[in-house]
Image (cartoon, rainbow, N blue to C red; front, top):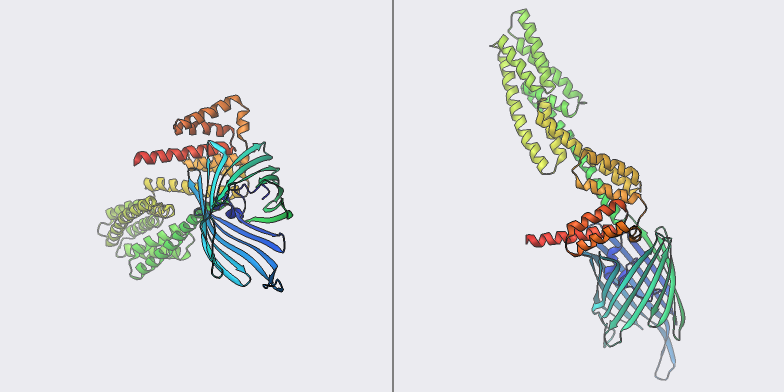
Length: 571
């Protein structure tokens, strides 16, 4: 109202659905707006609006408005007062808006309108449609169009039906910065409805110190003005207009933003996914250790001591703190040694066999299967007819071959599926079976580096959400050293560095003739459809002006055009 109701190309708080359903698509945080005013002749006007943005789905909104007049006199045919009655109109709207692509935003609001006049009531359903458009090359300009009651509600109170007229609005808004502390926004609308002449609306807003706003407008030839105050998440707005014959009208509204922004939610979700992956990995290790422990106990009960020992040692590899696995490993070793020296009469040979079997079993227990197999073979040279040692050797060779083959296939499959935690678990098991397995060592190191990088990124995202950008950059640079080929890490470092320095504008680039010529060169490349060159030039300037929203919008627009061009070529 303070800007002459020239609002179709602007976005604001939760009142936006009343003007243009598409205008809510730019709202980054959940927002509530409440408005109440007393008009003329016992008439009250109330509005409520709520918007809630979701990370990937767009922005949902609810709006409600009521205008009502009380104390209207009811008279008979002789003009005698009988009683009084009231009249009211109520509107409920349920809207949705989102970015469509290429700078275009759209929105749709379904609404229910009801009238109540002196005990007679009726209601009807309708819908509003709106669009807004902004282009990277003209970031200071936004175009808007809305069709209020495009699908027209029809209301019948008693016998006659009232059909709402579609109100079309076309408009534009321009935005200009004056340093970091002052912004000017100006806009105009042309309003047209059936059977009426076009109406012109115009207005301007001067925002300064990011908290205060002054507004002025022209509505149907009437001058309007007002202002706004924003303190943290709370906004208060005031407007005044002088209506002919009725006098001045003062209006005040209240708005409140709450919850995390869409960008904060997106970062929080990424950090949560990384932490969840780590928990799943740890849980997988614990579950596998429990399963192997049960299997080892079952093999021991069947007197399959060699395989029982192997599984007990696997449990120790996964969970070194398992007391049961350690005790049973020692027990299995003693039983096997006793079986190996049973029937050996020579005391000296008995000591040699006992010591070497124990040494081989220790290697087996520690996962050094190749060493254990070598020692079994040496023992057979000493005592070729020892059936216990033959069984130990055959069992060790078979288990080693089977386990290594199966676990290698599983590890590769899990890694290809993106299950890093599962793949790491399998490679660790392979290394516990064969300590000289160079492939397992290499794969484990790769996965550890990747998971360590993920953890550093998760911690950095938490710091970014807390506004601690310099600390976040330090963690991201460590992650970058671990994953030098990861473009997403490099991109996140650039974004975070940009947030840690004061913002710059297109005026800052203009102040340097060399940089400004470079900027224009990028613009020429863009206009000639050489989007790669434009991105390259503007990215160079981003390194000089890191927190520059104009440059980043240009780059994003060029990337969108390049992607669309590639899709067209593929088709």
